[in-house]
Length: 53
Image (cartoon, rainbow, N blue to C red; front, side, top):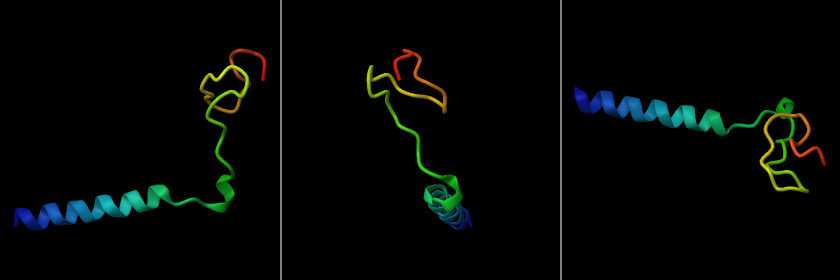
Protein backbone atom coordinates (compact mmCIF):
# COMPACT_ATOMS: atom_id res chain seq x y z
CA UNK A 1 0.00 0.00 0.00
CA UNK A 2 2.77 2.46 0.85
CA UNK A 3 4.60 1.63 -2.38
CA UNK A 4 1.46 2.53 -4.31
CA UNK A 5 1.18 5.88 -2.48
CA UNK A 6 4.83 6.72 -3.12
CA UNK A 7 4.49 5.80 -6.80
CA UNK A 8 1.42 8.00 -7.23
CA UNK A 9 3.17 10.86 -5.46
CA UNK A 10 6.20 10.61 -7.76
CA UNK A 11 3.99 10.50 -10.85
CA UNK A 12 2.12 13.58 -9.65
CA UNK A 13 5.41 15.43 -9.06
CA UNK A 14 6.61 14.50 -12.57
CA UNK A 15 3.39 15.86 -14.11
CA UNK A 16 3.72 19.12 -12.16
CA UNK A 17 7.34 19.46 -13.30
CA UNK A 18 6.29 19.08 -16.93
CA UNK A 19 3.65 21.81 -16.56
CA UNK A 20 6.21 24.04 -14.85
CA UNK A 21 8.51 23.89 -17.87
CA UNK A 22 5.71 24.56 -20.34
CA UNK A 23 5.87 27.96 -22.04
CA UNK A 24 2.73 29.62 -23.31
CA UNK A 25 2.80 32.05 -26.28
CA UNK A 26 1.20 34.88 -24.29
CA UNK A 27 3.92 34.82 -21.60
CA UNK A 28 6.41 36.62 -23.82
CA UNK A 29 10.18 36.59 -23.55
CA UNK A 30 12.13 36.24 -20.34
CA UNK A 31 13.77 39.28 -18.85
CA UNK A 32 17.51 39.79 -18.99
CA UNK A 33 19.37 38.23 -16.10
CA UNK A 34 22.06 40.87 -15.63
CA UNK A 35 22.63 44.52 -16.37
CA UNK A 36 24.81 44.88 -19.49
CA UNK A 37 26.83 47.74 -17.94
CA UNK A 38 27.45 46.88 -14.30
CA UNK A 39 26.65 43.14 -14.27
CA UNK A 40 24.20 43.36 -11.35
CA UNK A 41 21.29 40.91 -11.42
CA UNK A 42 18.05 42.49 -12.62
CA UNK A 43 14.84 41.80 -10.75
CA UNK A 44 11.51 42.85 -12.26
CA UNK A 45 10.86 45.12 -15.19
CA UNK A 46 12.26 48.35 -13.81
CA UNK A 47 15.62 49.94 -14.59
CA UNK A 48 18.88 48.72 -13.13
CA UNK A 49 19.68 49.99 -9.61
CA UNK A 50 22.97 51.44 -10.89
CA UNK A 51 20.97 53.92 -12.99
CA UNK A 52 23.13 53.44 -16.09
CA UNK A 53 20.86 51.16 -18.11
